[in-house]
Image 1 (cartoon, helix red, strand yellow):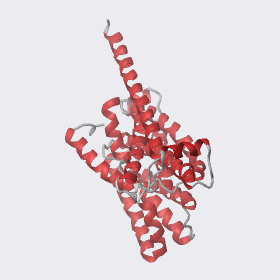
Image 2: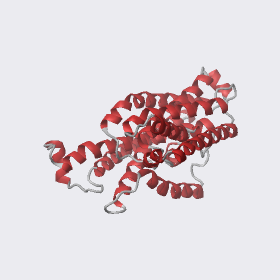
Image 3: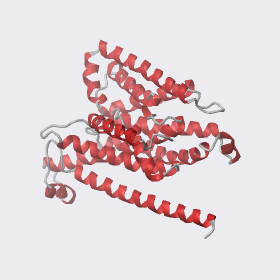
Image 4: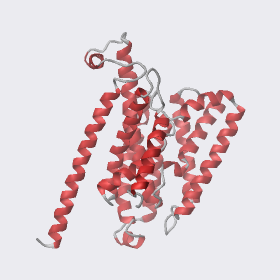
Length: 346
């Protein structure tokens, strides 16, 4: 067998292996989403869960809990966690920084400021009403980082400059946020529930209203990954392949803003998913950024669902918010990955 044929065969075998992993990941997501319907402060028996689908009774509180609370919670955990994983993978490749995550764009700080201004200035308290202000704040913060970090210049973003711009904008927005919170106890009371980061309290109406953004952002992520596959070969090679580098970089950042900003606006700032997931996935899929991006979506959904379920069962009779659980899970996982020296290089 010639070297060329051998290379083709190896690539086919690797693709089959990765596709097999994707199938396993989908099964895990479905399994975890199903498990999540049973557990909470109020556990629901399996027969009751099945009855909620087959013979819904609006007067049965368990049926209402399953259909109106736990199904949306599972959906946003899988969809939002997957989106954060994708955003983290794109950011690490784009910024050439293995420790980058969506917070690098100042998205969390911008969303937080948008929420606080809405609570303090507009007297909004309902979670549905806070979605748009959070999304606007996240987009403004990311836009400022994009401009200050030099992301659209000819030679691309300088990793150090980009990180410093993100840190500076995030710190500035956080300072404004706390200044408002000091002045308004009411704003602090509402904000503290949002900032913990949780998938609870999200309704299907909330998800449906922002579903078009996910429908736009996820295909954009696939396109961005394909372009980044060319950009990592170097700007000159990418240009020779017909890639418009400036457009590719803007598209990548815009994709991260849409996916991460939408999720943060719904569930609050969920940390560590965008940071840890790409490192977990990369050893299994190799250097192909398209495969990494798809894998990060599945792995992010699995991790978010697992954290949400664990937070419900760890302390019987109470819940630990998903954001807190991700910190408990993500910290040790990241330390383990660093010690194993896996996934720390792009």
